[in-house]
Length: 504
Image (cartoon, rainbow, N blue to C red):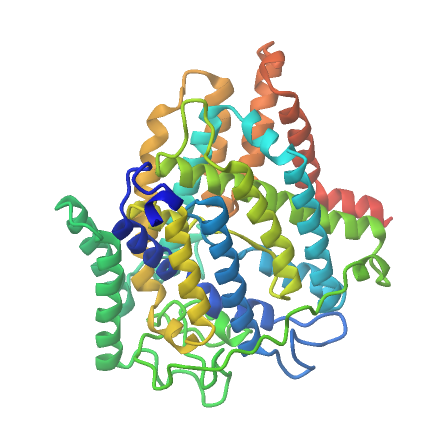
């Protein structure tokens, strides 16, 4: 029954691979349940209120529970309806933009209303076929470049989240090896152990190499924490509460305190691995439905034009982040046919569009497709069964929230580095001798990791492709939709001066 419904054999997979892939994807993105409350819960709206709370603090437990619930339901929807190995959750980057750039100008309900509006618009674009048409208008080699760029991007995410690459506190370069040029702390050893373990297992062609590596690194991290107490007693007593209650563990990033005054260079990236004393916790879904659909368009101090630009920013980011992510996942999984089409592409984009609005309804920011799903594809996942497994695990997390703290970044991120390598191998299929392809491909590939933004890389590549083809006298070869989209990206890049002009 499973094979028939999900077409597992047809796509060259097995039930075992799909289940392993679903677990790996969950492990590599479960951090969002702990991280999203920190990002959204650390900001106040224009009235001085925190999300789900009053003026003294946010409702971290409710944010975490709703984050897990929405991720679970939407990922199940993706697996069962679109039959694609893609998981969804609150979008990183977008949630920061919502917390800092939107909620600070209006109430949380108004901000979430904007997200629902954006999600409804993008859903209409899918139903009318516009989003799919844009997807098909992109030349195949630019799609490959997008996939390669995302491979480098998720590799950098893995290295940064593990602390292998960090921001410099001094010097002429923005990032460096470890802590100002030095690898420090036991967590780095855990990361290295996980990475080497996966590489060795892959070379030996061991099934479940990535999953085994993540689990092995997690076990090692628990042993290391038990022996050396890396995450205990670092912060002053009572500085900040954990998302799930208790004292917040230290982090080398320093964001855990809100102000970043307490930084432990040798600390863990986010979670301190330990066997929790409490496993089951009753979920709090009180944030559901707390949005004001058109409230942002009536806020004093925020013009209608400004509100429209905010929606446009959310829309463009959601639109093209997903195009890039779906392309990368499908390419890595060998799911693109000879004509460059992806199976059930319309359904995939529809689920992703609904997810954007659902995030606003749940008051936990726009939900979108996660490139970390590539880790599950790297483990062999090829169908929606993997997404069903990931979705069920997220739903269980609403009750088993304390277990999320067991897996540290350092144990999960080796999977992202490995998948980045697998995606990078596609670069050989790009025609670098054609400037109209090679230069846009280069910009897309290089800007995604350097700007930490998929949409920026896609936009720069599209604009460069159109301009170069015009200069070459080959403008007629460019699809009309690419002219339109490139023009929209020009507006996207010039938002700051446009805002300044509108405000005068």
